Length: 216
Image (cartoon, rainbow, N blue to C red; front, side, top):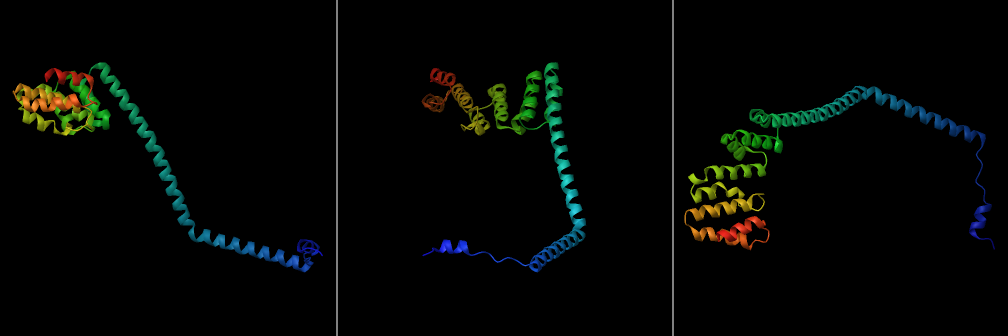
């Protein structure tokens, strides 16, 4: 008895007549003409919009390229100006660069300007308006080193309060500085509280931990 598969093999697909082939060809031709006509109608209807969109894309792409090149050129110019100012030891040029630059580059230029001319006003500007926390905290430590004798321990504590967190890179330096100020005022209990914290802190830098142990 023949299986279903064998029976299906014997069944031949009906052959199309010449007229049917011609009908299919005519149908395909008409379908292509209709599609082409619809495409042309769409293009005619929205051609202006498509041109505007293409122009906008071109403008945006060009603007991005120009922006990238300008940004790179500005970075190179800033680096060259900084290098020249350092070579010439020109504090004024560094201060001007700090006004025109941004981020850590501006902070570094302003700090270098202070190191060259010892203008505390530059240091205060950096402490108050610096772009990065690292340089703001560094500037505050330097100001405490300059004006610490005129501060009370409470004034110093308040001034360094933003550094009373391990997220500050100068946290331990600020803590040991405040402890020393307490000791200068004979407030040993407040000083020892800070010193004990530093000594017990496994993450404290070895030099600061040794200084704390000596002061304790």
